[in-house]
Amino acid sequence: MSEWHSTLTPHALARQLPAADGRRPAYRALAAQVSRLVADGRLPVGTRLPAERELAAELHLSRTTVAAAYEALRADGYLRSRRGAGSWTALPEGTAPPADALHPVSPEQGAVLDLGLAAPTAPAQLAEAAAHAVAQLPAYTGGHGNYPTGLPVLREAVARRYTERGLPTNPEQVLVTTGAMSALHLAHQALLSRGDRVAVEAPSYANTLRALDRAGARLVPVPLHDGDGGGPAGWDLAQWQRVLRGAAPRLASVIPDFQNPTGALVDEEQRRALLAHARAAGTTVIADETCAELGWGVAERDLPRPLAALDRDAQVITVGSAGKILWPGLRIGWLRAQPSLVRKLAADRALYDLGTPVLDQLIAARLLTDHLPAIRAERHAALRATAEAFAREVPRHFPGWRFTPPPGGLALWAATPGLPTTALARAGERTGVRIASGARFGVDGAFEEHLRLPLTLPAAHVPDALRRIAGAAALARTERLSGDDPAPAAL
Image 1 (spheres, rainbow, N blue to C red):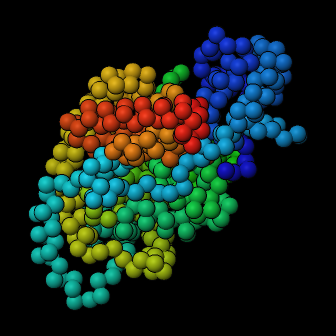
Image 2 (cartoon, one colour):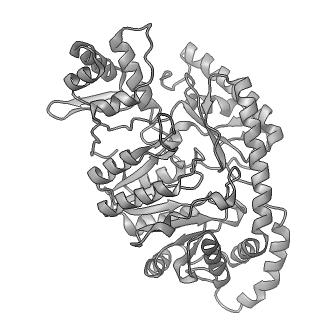
Image 3 (cartoon, rainbow, N blue to C red):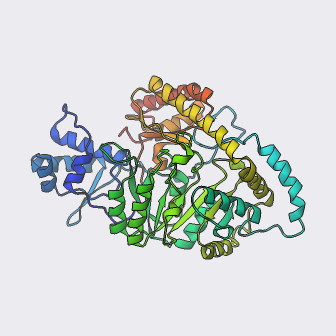
């Protein structure tokens, strides 16, 4: 975690506090309110809380009550204090997210239902595209087959699609990579030094958070705005301004289009505002657009332009992928940036990856050029059907869970009050269902009581998936009550 601490004013904290439980003493109620904000990721770990006297005045409580609440938070692991430095939020020992990346279940584990991966199956058009690519392959076999920046035909297809979406692009601005994570790795290697701060959304894509952590970055989480209390859902611009101004992060990592895991779509006004704050801070923005084609709940004409289309200072680097809209098995990603940076990254990749497989690139180019509208329509219909099935079935199986139906993307992000999902995931390993716990998508273990449900599951399988999750939940509760579960107690 970064040593920089965002300072929260008494008024700002008071606005965020959920309703108090009148059955508990006032100090316990306040401690529970604050710990809930921290556990849910709405109050990032490392946030400096107001002084006791200031918060007491804002909440019309005695200073003794606030002091007792702070002491209870320290005892429970949600607050750390140092004389002369104040008190800042924390999470109890043992709540850090798993350090490993999130991998798909092996095909040999056929009895396991994999809800940990949000990825589509191959489109029906893949066979035609593969046959066309094989027919084109002889034109490329006379040389070494290494194309550090990518095949011209694929770079042209990617550039053309950006232009169609409102971001004029030429092929020299496109670097083809072996998947989106490869593009992110190249950008991190080129732009980050160990110890640099990186502002990230909270929650955010699990593997990106792990990759930044492995690169030695100090992550500064910025909570997403859920739309409650006014303002559009998406980025909390006041928080972003505070972090960018105070922490001066080297990079900001954002997913503006159907955010993973929440599915949130950030509107154009918010995009402009964030870029202005980043420009003032001298922060480079990496926009993950791997889900940009997945707006199954919004008309294409109503989509905001890509973040880089609003960028006048070349401060935005855009990462895309064929994996989310076409098929992960192709292992095709790309990065859009200034030609000079594209050339530098192409030279850097020679140290570990001379290029992306030619045949995969030819298949992807064919799919993007000739089949994308049909594939998008098919994907959207399937994702919409599964989202509707979850919206219908989740309240039947888990009436206490909360979620906001997203306008697109590959997942449903559900709050699971009273059910720690790290323990749920462990129980699922023994009951035949693989689960991605919410803590994987947070910094320092936040979002422990959240769960990502993949919309790539066929709609007809949703009831069975929820029954399996219910079985895992029953086992997790039993183990926790009996003391057999090594996971921390429910938050």
